[in-house]
Image 1: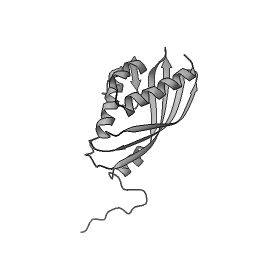
Image 2: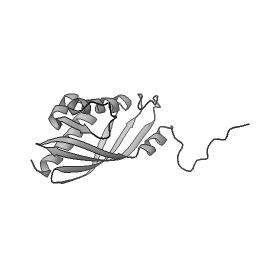
Image 3: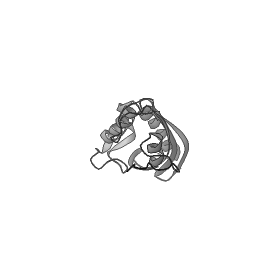
Image 4: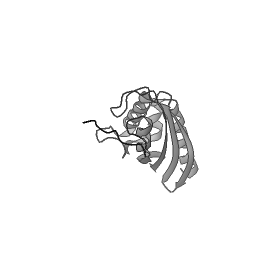
Length: 148
């Protein structure tokens, strides 16, 4: 399998899993020992871990949609720059639903073995996401002062 096939696989995985919530597709895209380095330590590995991640995101953002902005592949690795969009209608990371729309820039790096993803790393704008959810004030806003 070459870089063109890796790109096609990643495009299909985002469309089927994240955008449409087709959890059964996880088996097609990741190995049995797949590890997501960005998941919590107690998250499962393999296809179950990918299903766990998709379920967590789609529960929090039922209208979740990833746009793939750029794909770059070389050897056994692929990098994809994405934009995640959705409206928070469910809890995530202990944050109650805010009904706020969000947009988050992300970069994902995947390593392939035998035509499937075996390892995943990501860089996300989590600060920007928390600001959009209203959990953290936007940059430059004055902190609240206590009245004594």
